[in-house]
Image 1: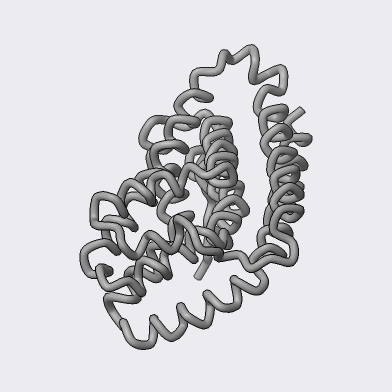
Image 2: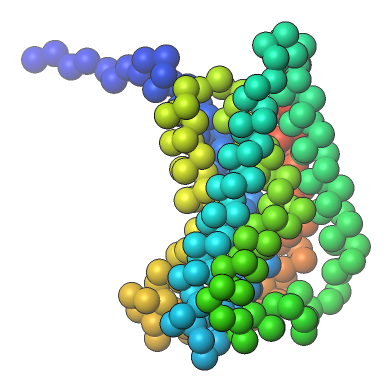
Length: 232
């Protein structure tokens, strides 16, 4: 009995390569502390039953919108510019910006508690529409915007068809929003145990959030710069 090794056609190979390039960006989004801390505030608020799902939907929509817009804009870049290393220079710019952002945030937050009184704590008083809108804005923070731009560049650089681009966009947005969607969904399935875990995770992030942010942004920024250099 003979066995044949699995092979992938050009389209499948393109999709797998693009998804592989998106994984580091997804990890940077998942390890983002501010969306998670905001999610904890929403889920521990008295109005969580009416605000949690709109908040999750708003965050997912925000990621979809900006990543999709960036990918669409880069998708119309003239072919002659792509030959000149346009996507490589774009990724180098995004990666460098992430590194600079990491250093700036570290300088501002070093030695301080990450979750301070302010707009995050006011989330517990928001209604469904305010929670939805604040989650969209949360997805448009500088770090999220830079990562979404990098994801859009990854999607556009492979010159996918429209269906392929939509699949990649949905995959990235679904995975990147897991830091919000997973706690929200788990709070519906197993509310008591989820709340205990969220409180523990919140305390850990309040102590170490600045270090986590620094390490993640430095690592991902360096990876993006390196990927950009390979495109030149």
